[in-house]
Length: 89
Image (cartoon, rainbow, N blue to C red):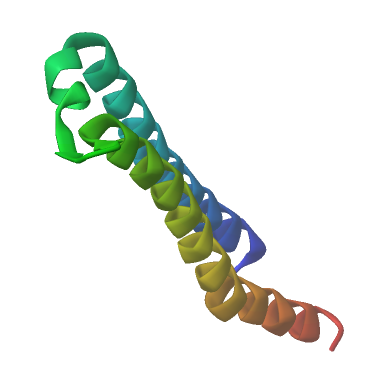
């Protein structure tokens, strides 16, 4: 794999994960704006669906970050190391 191909692969993954985070975030915002009765419904005293979904938005952002870091550490970094080794020969 060349640097150019690796660069495009990294961007595809970054864009896909960014789209996931944006969809989750804007989906939450749309629910807050247009489904107030749903978001205000209590699951247990002191915990509404809105609060739970807000926390899940944060967890989703952490999860997508973890996915990217894990991919970069296992695939991207090893490929960069291999390409650098080939270039120095």
